Image (cartoon, rainbow, N blue to C red):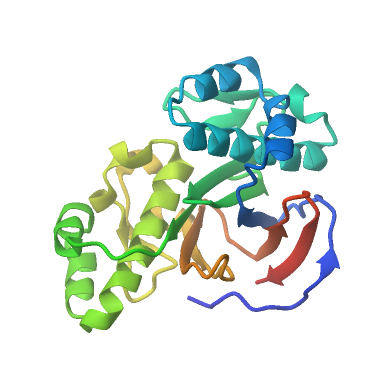
Length: 258
């Protein structure tokens, strides 16, 4: 898989998305009081009710901030007021834009990091994970990896196994999110080609042809010294990915393009 290459830095961009590109924003989740209050008023009634049902205050603040940041990006892309954007949910729960179904979006957050992906006329999913040591990687591999993936993982040197686990995990999560089925699809049934990890060996029959789906690992710069793993899955060729840093003041900087 070709790594993301830095082409431009410190260049302000607009929220316009080229028709053949996928645009990603990444950054820290802004839960400061001024940002929280601003984001709260952007949410629709169902989002506000959901937030109020979250008992943990920090979880509630992250939910409000993440969905407020999403609505701000959508608003600038669609040139709409963020609180006026209608976000519905498909039968399996995947959100979509009721008035602009041709614009796909997806978000993922881990700890205090958020990644948001947008693209036209496609299905897409994105996942991000912060690195942490896991005591039972072998058990997770047995449960969530296909035979071909597990065989590849087991032959790796021990010092590479944790990182490679996260790479497979984020690719699989991005794919099941893109389909709308989520992990109920069965991560072990979404078989990535270990020798060419931008492609699948097989996927469940209800997800279409495996050759139509594409994966890309996304190299995110360190945020607060955290090691991050992120992946994107799209049901069309990924010709260009524009990666932008999401600032707390919602001023985006173009960082990378692949």
